[in-house]
Image (cartoon, rainbow, N blue to C red; front, top):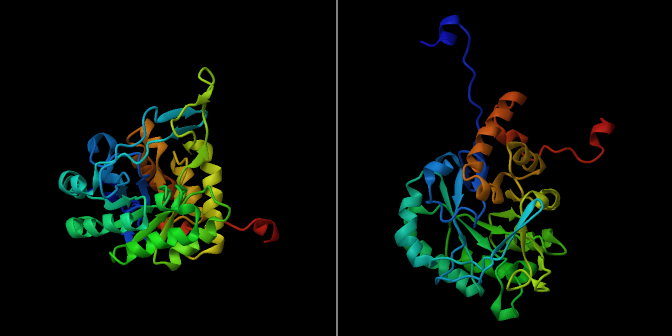
Length: 325
C-alpha cells in the first residue's frame, strides 16, 4: 500500500488525454508532422515514439522519387526553409520494409500520400489498401504536390482539384482521410469545404508557407526551384489563425500544425479548435520533442484542474466576449 493509501488520501488521477479525431480515436492528440520523422521507425527509443498518439509517415508516392537536388534545407531566424521534393522509397518498399516495424511501435499509423495526378494518389491508396491490412489506421493526403496535368501548380490551391484527389482516394478506402491544406491560398475554408464534401473526414492545417532565400554571392535563389516551404516557430501565429478560420466556418475535425514546440503551443491550438496537433521542425532539433509535448499537456491539465483534455477543444472565447460577460 502506498503512503497516500495508508493516510486515507485519494491518489491524484492522471488526466485523460484521449481525443476523437472524427472516426479515429487517439490516446493523446500529439503526432509528428509528415516529412520530419522519416517513416517513424528511426531511433524509436531516442524519440520516445511510443508516447505519441499517432505517427505520420513521410509522404509516399506510388513509385519511388529521388527528390530535389541539394541544398534542401536552409535555416532562417525562427524557422526552416525546405525543398525536399517528396523524396521517398515508394509504396512497395514501405509496405515490405517499414510498415511492419512501424505498426509494432504502438501509436496509430497515418500514412501520408502524394502524387502528381489525382489518379496517382488513388493508385497509391489502392496498393496501400491491398498490402497494408490492419496496420494502417488512416491516410493524410498531401495536396501541396504539384499537379503536372494542370501546369505544375499545387492541387491544394484549387478546390475542384483537391476535391478530385479526395474523391479518388475515398473510392478506394473506407479508412479515415485527412487532407493537409496549403496556407498559400486566398480562402482556405473554401478549399477545406470542397475536400469535406468530396469525402474527407478532417483537415490538417497547415502545410508550409512559401518563402524565398537568396544567395547574395551567386545572386540567385538558394534552392534549385526558387521558392521553398517555411516551417518552425515563425509561422505559428499564421497557422493558428488558419485553424481559427477553419473552425469558424466548417464543422470538421482539425489537426493543427505549424511551429508547435511546447505544450503551451499545443494547448493554444486545441483551445482554438484543433482536435489534435502535429510537431514538425521541433522534432528535427529534438527527436523527443513530440513526447515532451505529451508530457507537458498532462502537466498543464493537472495545473489547471482539467480531467479530460478534449473538454478544452474549441473553448477559445470570441473576441470581446470576456468584456461583455
